[in-house]
Length: 267
Image (cartoon, rainbow, N blue to C red; front, side):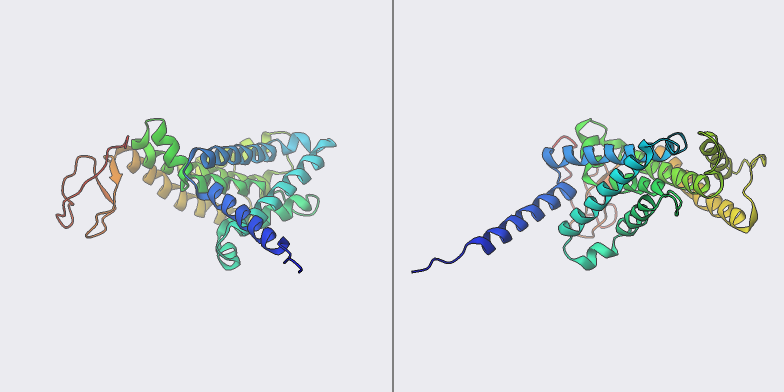
């Protein structure tokens, strides 16, 4: 009597195990997941460092090697996130999917397209919303600084995004790091509305970039200031009305008066 072939079932089981492992790595809160999330964050920072060092490496043979190695890594990340997503529709609705696709294209064709690897800084924005930041601060005993750190991350992400865009669009061909310093100087002067005027962006595109930078930059700066001076509140949804934030010593919900049982930070 012939025995059924277990191979299809084994393959399906392996695929399911891989998918669960990827989902745990992406959204898990245990030590194993947080350790891998920290490693991925370090790799993201290394990719940003490659973008900053681009003017120094561009003339050497190692530039294309590192460029294509990063492209392979980002392609593998896209595939892993596609496998971990509940559905391909959900995967394609995520902003980071399209951002990484643009980065991948610029890395695969560095001579034709501008290097938009600076968009990778959006991964730091994603980290600000991930368990890595929340659990890391809690383990370090700095859970009360979560709002401040998240607001600072959002501001730094925007600062680097604008600096990277200005650098890539207007100053990328300058020697060494001078172009990035000019772009950073212009961005900071614009966000703070100081407007020294010694460095300006040419044309209509430059003026629109300046206007958008001022509007969004001031908003994020004010939000950061509010996070610093605002009294700390814990994240604890009220079971009755759903109010998310309460004072650390709150006994009753301010919105509906429901009795609360807020755990200590160390619990």
